[in-house]
Image (tube, rainbow, N blue to C red; front, side, top):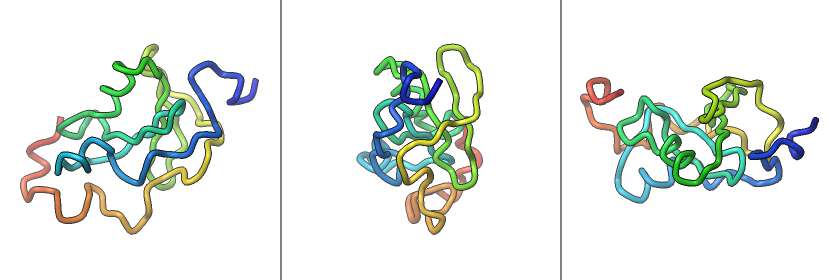
Length: 117
């Protein structure tokens, strides 16, 4: 079975941007980024204060999200809470390596470690 045949995965859709869409729109920040494997929405991970990737999965019904971190190739199913090896998705497959983690640059508070989940 190819990625295009797996319900909830569309390998042709590019990511929505290079940072969490909601955090960038609200002056927020993130620890790590996740990408919806169906619509490309980029959100922040569950350790981040706002947990936008999981919120997107719940509100949209899109169960799969992939790491959007350089060098990581896993896929998470939010419904079954299982990890998988990520099938090839449309590029880019990660945020730019020049983008800091946590990010975005200039928005991360000095006490960021105390604010993680």
